[in-house]
Amino acid sequence: AQSVTQLDSQVPVFEEAPVELRCNYSSSVSVYLFWYVQYPNQGLQLLLKYLSGSTLVKGINGFEAEFNKSQTSFHLRKPSVHISDTAEYFCAVSFRGAGNMLTFGGGTRLMVKP
Amino acid sequence: DTAVSQTPKYLVTQMGNDKSIKCEQNLGHDTMYWYKQDSKKFLKIMFSYNNKELIINETVPNRFSPKSPDKAHLNLHINSLELGDSAVYFCASSHGTGGGYEQYFGPGTRLTVT
Image (cartoon, rainbow over all chains, first blue to last red):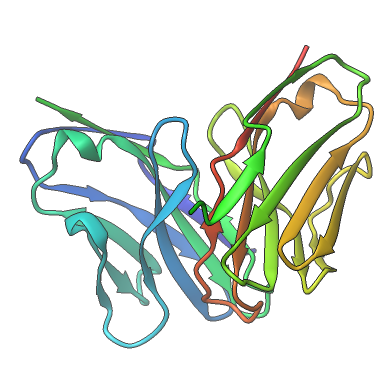
C-alpha cells in the first residue's frame, strides 16, 4: 500500500535553533515528493519539491530537504528557525500513475519559541 | 491577483441542508482538485478534474457532486449535509496530470454543520 508518514505531530524548538521534520513514505512505484507549509487559517504553500536528480533540494524561506531512496525518506531541515516559521508542515507524495493526486502525511506542527 | 480563490470562506449551516462551494483559478491550469481537511488537520483528496472531465473520485459519498463548467472553475455541491461533513475544503489547481506538478491551493472554505 502507498502511504506517507510524518513521525512527529509536534516539534517545539527555540528560535535560531536547527530543526528537522521527518517524513517517510511507502511505495512500489516511483514517487515525486513535496513539502507544503500551512500558516494559521490559510491555504497550503509549496516549500520545495523533489522530482529527480540531485537528492538535496533547496526551497523557499531557507528550508531544504534530502531524498533518501534506500530509507524512503524525505526529511525537511532548516539550520536556524524564526518565530515566523511557526506553522503546520505537510509532506506530500505523488505516486507515478496516480494522476498527480497528492497523498499527504498527517502534518507536523512546528512551534518556534523565543 | 489571487491565483486560486474560493467562496465562501466560511459556511455555517444546519444538517440536511444543501450547499455549494465555488472555486476559480486564473493560472491557466487544466487540472483542478478538491481536498478535505478534517479537524485533526489530515488532508485527503476528494476529486480531480482535467479539462472539465472527472479523473479522480476517491470514494466520496455521492452526496458530494463536483461540477466543472470550464477549465478555470470547479464547484462542489453537497446535498443533505451531515455533522461529519464539517471540515475545511481546499481547492487546488495544477498543470497536467502526469505526476510531479506543483499544486496551487486556495485559502480554504471552513464548513460547519450544526
